[in-house]
Image (tube, rainbow, N blue to C red; front, side, top):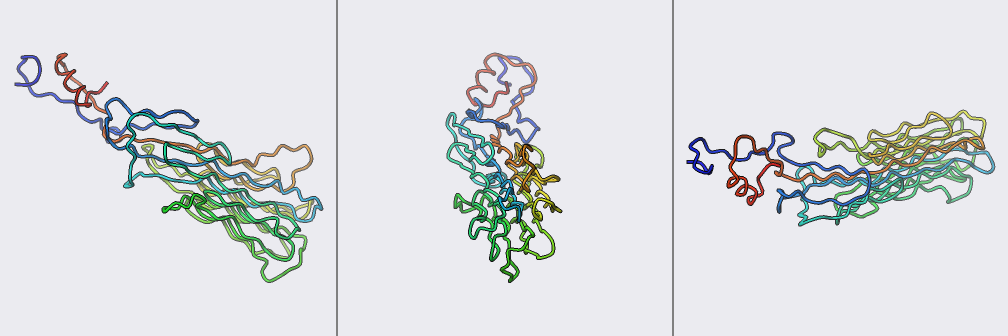
Length: 318
């Protein structure tokens, strides 16, 4: 005899949805509040949190000798899915989705924004890439090369990103007239390193991002921006490619933005002409929550008694 108010027939119970294994997925592309589902109860909540991608320099060197800039670092990438330690959220928690160069948060989880991609310059010590979730790429300066910024600025046990690309002077100390720019770091790889060359400008590629399937399909997040380098204001200009996962890859002196919703770092720029719009800003981040075993299907004919019972068990599918 089933719990169906005296009607004789097979036992009917709610079943987990076959979509994403019954997990409920909530995606935030702007800040808000996450509230657990009524039928989730104390079940685990997995997360993916990506910070805003780093911006990059304009490459507008005052003396017009070394134009260009390193790529911006990707926003920090942190996730518990799959196989990590999920959160237990009793009710609700605030969510911050970082814009360019801003942190993202999900309750106690913070992912750091990407580091700034350094301008090329002939001033000693002025063009180191900035640290971030992933670091910005370095640029060439007088009397030597310069490093990219460090990654994992949050000092997390599982690193949120990688360093930006380093610029080596190749043993030469002349300022020369050729630029050299490192790529921004990505969640999955360091930014491209380069060695300054006396005969041609060089630019590193952005580091690749990391793929994750918390959203129900594989998506790559947090790619670094490509470096851009030139020879004074007359060119030619060299453009590093953006890393997979939204890293900016420029095709013009104005640079390129990182992709919004992926936390991609911006590409460098190469001293755009006066009045030209700057487009090299980091992409916004993203926050995704995945609640386990909470999407139930309740097909069939039910009595009110059964509905009340399964609601009390937090297994009724609305």
